[in-house]
Amino acid sequence: MKVKIVKASKPTYWYAWHIGETFEVQDISGYRSYTVINNPKYKVHCISKRDCEIISETVKIPFTFEAWDKDRSQKVWTRDGGEVKELTWFECLNESPILGVVEKKLYRWRKDGMWDKTLTSLDLLLEHTEKEYFVNVYEGKEGIIIGGISYSEIEAKQTRMPGNKLIKTISFKA
Image (cartoon, rainbow, N blue to C red; front, side, top):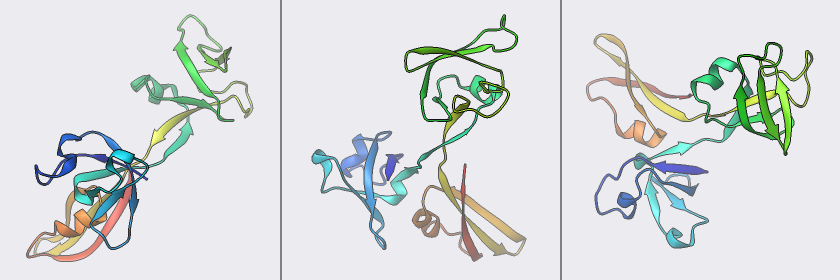
């Protein structure tokens, strides 16, 4: 799996100079850090789980013009896995206003990302990266309390709210 360095708990950690960079790591159960793999320069180094966030695998979600229009730099794919390049919206085209290039061929799509009126292998999908987050749920004097968002389960368990009873740690993807 891949992680992105978000901080360095101590300035002496080797990755203190690599904040924002991503590394391929291995998670060994029971340890508070990940082991860097597939990188000859850092192959024997570890990264504290509380100093990084997991970069989840990408998923493909149905294309909507509104979602794509918010961030036109995101990758777009056809249903059969072809990468769509140079995707452009043309207001002057009514029926199929989206044009793009797939494997050096120009294609047109409707505003909803469909190539035709029925499902086809050329329909558009947006690439979406889900990240996993963790939150502690507590029982306190005021009732149920939700703790802060953590980037790993270990970090969530290490950042408990004193004076409150931990009910459970939950995870969610966004």
